[in-house]
Amino acid sequence: MKTGGQLIVDALEANGVDRMYCVPGESYLAVLDALHDSKIRSIVCRQEGGAAMMADCHGRLTGKPGICFVTRGPGATNASAGVHIAMQDSIPMILFIGQVASHAKEREAFQEVNYRRFFGDIAKWVVEIDDAARIPELLTRAFSVATSGRPGPVVISLPEDMLTSEVEAPAALPAVAVETRPGDEELAKLEALLNSARNPFVILGGTRWNAEAVERMKKISEAWSLPVGVSFRRQMLFDHLHENYAGDVGIGVNPKIAKAIKDADVVLLVGGRFGEMPSSDYTLIKSPYPDQKLVHVHADADELGRVYRPTVAINASPAAFVEAFAKRKPAAKPAWTENTKALHAAYLEWSTPPLAGPGAVQMGPIMNWLEKVLPEDAILTNGAGNYATWVHRFHRFRRFATQGAPTSGSMGYGTPAAVAAKGLFPEREVIAFAGDGCFMMNGQEFATAVQYGLPIIVIVVNNGIYGTIRMHQEREYPGRVEATDLKNPDFAALARAYGGHGETVRETDEFAPAFERARASGKPTIIEIKLDPEAITPTRTLSDIRDKR
Image 1 (cartoon, rainbow, N blue to C red):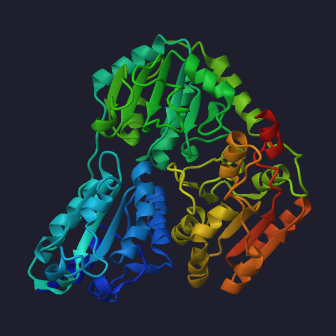
Image 2: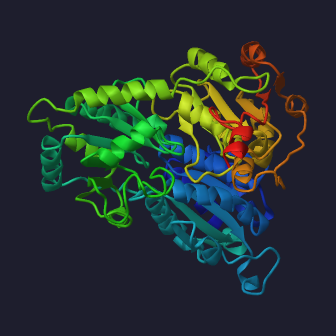
Image 3: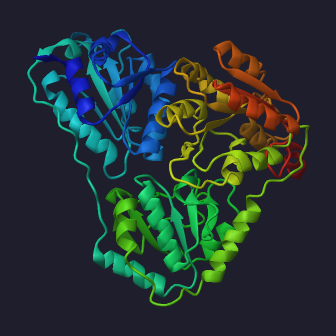
């Protein structure tokens, strides 16, 4: 006989879970009690949204479901931001929510929420466990659902009395991985299309990649001389200094890459959905009928033909696809080799930051310096905002599992993601980028880094405004600024108050020594960069935007 709480922990252990992220609550005390005797490490967070984002980053970097526990009502609704990220980004995650006791349900009891309704559209599966004896069954299913097809978040509601009830149940067994592999007929069609192509283009995206698959994709690109782009915030899928790399297909795409995709006769889309942001509002590849011959590879059959009608649909995970297609070689030397070289040269030019701009701090030289000193396996995380352009456009990602950034465009992600990344890979350098508005949304998770001795470095690009919104506001309603100014704390002092290290950069030359002091401190660090609000993008100022309006 075991309690529901014990059965939950047993099932997590059976599925290889070694850590979970949580904000404690009285609604799942029975689980916390069972964790006391488990080898699973509990990472205590400061807000449920941050905890869920840590679980998301865990799933993003490992391919295994990130586990998050929160309490009912406000705890669950706070966590919904992380669930939404995991859903839109196709990240495996399982959120456990303590629920009101069974006798109180449907009475609008204290902090009661109907989780099936609340999470129904932003989770892959939502279930409430009423019978503790079914915990092994339903958790095995949850791990399978979270990782198979298009990965995503599963939400599990745990009534308080169910967790304390004692039942007999079978020992939990791990979920069995579900793989989808390409058929020979589909691979032959792709081979024929490439052999007859004049101007092909490859776009990599989505999840269910691993380091071996990324390496195989590189070999495929070399064998076929294919130009390779990566979808929005999936930049760790291809080495940016490889001669076949064409650039990222995201917000503010390089016009030369956009033209190459539009002019392509064959587009091979591997793993991604190619949604609104990477497709430039469905203009690079038209929906529903592309101008190009589209070969779409995706692990979930429901995604094939959902937005774009493909010429060839291949229902396979990226890892299985590249393993199979790597065995096929071109019939003759590809005719587009020079075009591939030209696109890589265009990327190198596009990713060279400007050295001048308004204000005393120039982000271009700072990014140049970081490129020289950061190791290839450094992990960079960020949330959303114009500041992120400096990372996405000018940092040259070299390896898999080095990027934590939400394709859903959620703010507040960078700091909690960095905490999770450093906990997973303590030997690697982890840098979080955040705007001042972005940091303040989940910046309290800096305290979690201090608590667990995780020396992340958070670079806060502080321009005193909600920059992206101000940019759009100045363009659409020039001279009518409203609700986009921010008065911020002293971020370096805030870091010290938390028990970390703090630095303030007011001039460009101050950044390098500040960064080296941060490294030497061995503490979690905030480096605040005082950026002129006029420097709204790497190439435009707010004045430019107003004048052109």
